Image (tube, rainbow, N blue to C red; front, side, top):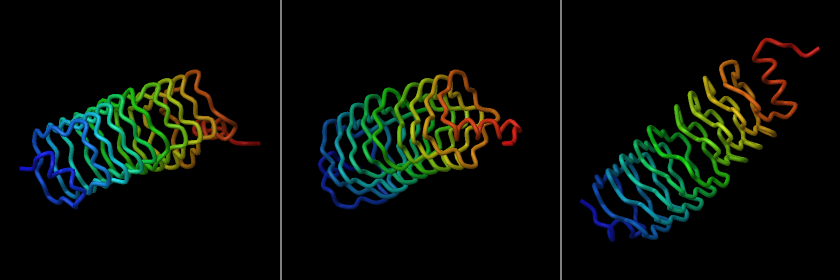
Length: 205
């Protein structure tokens, strides 16, 4: 069992079971965790900069109002975890999975989210501009009113994704199947319109 002081030393912590710890307001700096499990941990208002969470599992945790700058959550699993009013700036979330998580409101400033799974996530009105979402699974996600300007969505899965009122201008949509996406008043640039037309069987003359 780890306490708050032991978790904020900055040294690599591996294979730890961390249950019910209150880290609220802690500055974890460039902390390093590998193969750790966090259960019901309060990370409200926590700050990290250059921290690395590698293959960690978060269950019932709270990242509310926390701030993460250039930190990495790689191949992590988040279940029933809240990111209410959190900030993720330049973070790497590649290969991570989010299940039944609270993702709004959330501030996202760039970063690499390649291969993340956000199936069925409620992402309404989030600003995800310029985010690297290559190979992300956004199936059944609700992105109503979201800003996806200049995102790289190449090879992303958008099966039954709701993009009503979303802004995809400048987004890269290479190898994206748009046939089942829900679009109404969605903003697309010329490349996006071509991708949508091709998804529905049209051919350029």
